[in-house]
Amino acid sequence: MIAISTSNKSPAVARRIRETLEKQFGPEYTVLLTLMGAIRQKLLAQGKSPEAHKKMFERLLDEGLLEKVRENRIQEIDGMLKGVLGEGYTSKELMSV
Image (cartoon, rainbow, N blue to C red; front, side, top):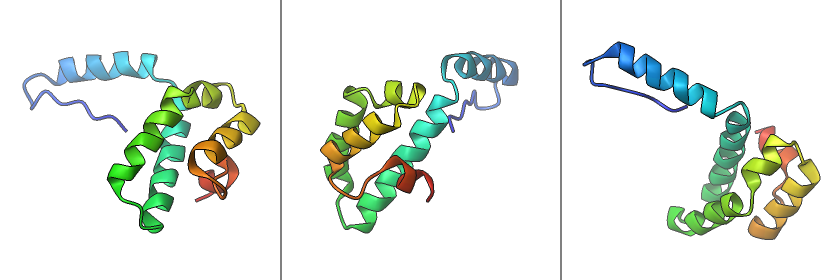
């Protein structure tokens, strides 16, 4: 979820910005955010510090996770997750949480 606020100065401007962003950020971002959130929760549950996550998340994004999600390339997503995060991270497992 992305929130837009103009601090009540112009709800019309906030609505226009939201509508513009909705056109730019399609449903693949919902899947990406769900996946990234599940990864984050699993890492936190394993006692890993949030600072340690930063490089992992940046690597996933830099290596094209969004594009793979957009194109529903599950095997490539799972390979990337394994390569960056190690065993035990699959899209199926993470998306079912």
